[in-house]
Length: 263
Image 1 (tube, rainbow, N blue to C red):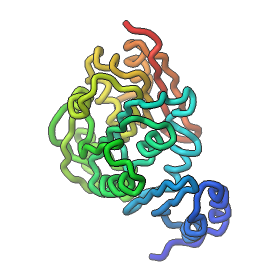
Image 2: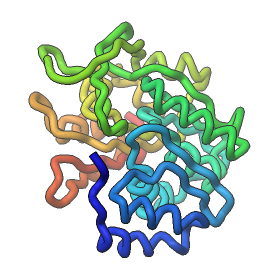
Image 3: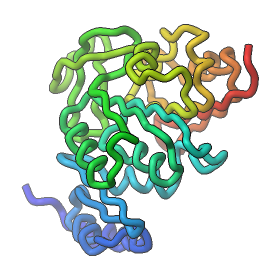
């Protein structure tokens, strides 16, 4: 069935004209109520996404609105960054190009997203500075069922007992394994967006492990069994100053943690 025409939505897309070269293509996608699949930024950065990925929305959240707060306080030059739930790489490329991160280690289990992620790395000459691991990150190492959503950004590791949706089997590693795979001792910035798996990741992490991070940004999600305050408590006990943000009219938000002192 053809997408419904959305002329007023297309007018709202004009706000992106200062950011993108291919603004006419973006405008046409908005007008036809379709996903934007290619962005050519005025800075020279090129981004693309296969399948149903809301590329323009991700650009707005990560680049324009700085939802993970790399600008304040500004990420230090030459930082080591770990990106859990990298999707097609908007955060990783943002950190590498706009903040001169030394290396960004990306963890993403979706084959479709990884395909776009690798293309975006190559298109922007970031081979070596952005490294990709096709793993999910969870509370335990091993295989898990992965719920594949028509909207690629909503893919998630299945909860125990869940029966709905199309699934594939993926390999998962723990937060401890992440350090071993990346071969680093410390991480300046950890970004986590994994559609609910954040709870098992942090609840299973050894307390001492969290001291190897300087800053953490988590997009938390509604869970049937957990609350974001649990993550706040874990991070505070590990010596972080923590801020919890709830997004208006949404069952999600962000947790920002910065190391204040060692325990």
